[in-house]
Length: 468
Image (cartoon, rainbow, N blue to C red; front, top):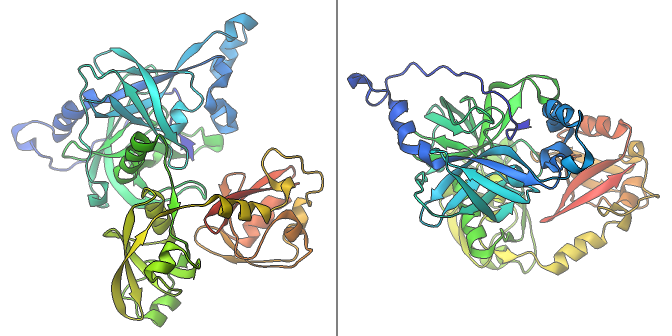
């Protein structure tokens, strides 16, 4: 997977051979849509105290794309020159509120920036301030002076269907605004075990430089924020292969609303742990389809407990939106402001009911309790001289496969896994930000040389365990 905030050329993409609105009169439907929304799609440049401070350079995959730029700095540049602030194109953005000057983009586009500049379609440049940013969803909100701005109307991403036509608009570095087209290839995609992902997959070419740009439906409405691509080459250098991903506006709008209201996303909890619905669950519970989230535990005294949610209930909807998987439930709850109520449609032994469940803050006690079960040597930034070797982690630990990772179904006291900090009921999300889905895959990653960081979900608290 490759984030898109990189300065290289866009691949050409053939327009779909379909009859579009306006085609009978000789006018392309794409042209009409683009003319309507293009003024609201902007370029974003960032400044750091040193050019090497670009957040993308911290990742070895991204760093390869900047080799030419690093080479240029290495010839005849003095130390004082590299210490000067450097403005560098970093991606794209979308004006969503012209009156307030609000621009949506990606967190990874603006991460670490000391200065932000927005370039409009009419070549004006406006200084921007970061209102707030949410790494979990990779959404950031900027504010510019509300002067002669054009906003892109926000559409309903939940209304998208696989096969719908879409247009991607972005500002690749050095090329200016570029438009590509395609279809919605899939919905509800997740690429990483960390964060909150519910991507729209599209074959519209969204190449490096398009991060934060617009995915538009044929009504000229914003339905997604372009974010990432899968690349066909080694090290992420193969370019676009027709698999791009966009954050749906249902998620981006919820993040924007919280950032404007609180300055950050205040995630809450309802006090449940769930697992995927399988064929066995469908047969046992009499469900009509393999979908939903099966409740496997309810915290005593939690809001879900007080509302009447019980073990073996299957959550089918949250606030009228279908829940297909456990990730759907997690994503929906995570974006509801603390203090609000959600409506859960629940299936219990053949009977559907609706429960009103308040979203509560994750208490400091819960975080502290989860951290207390983990050795201090596993906390980020703490020396870990006594951490077990990677190859011994699997000893004394029982694992089973789940959709979001590996479920720890048993840990023997005193075993290396227990000493490291693993506990019964933990879900192993990934290693070094890469997902793991099988015991064999987990073991293979652990056998690689070097230290590793294992991402673990314990209840509703995320932890990082250091190995090696």
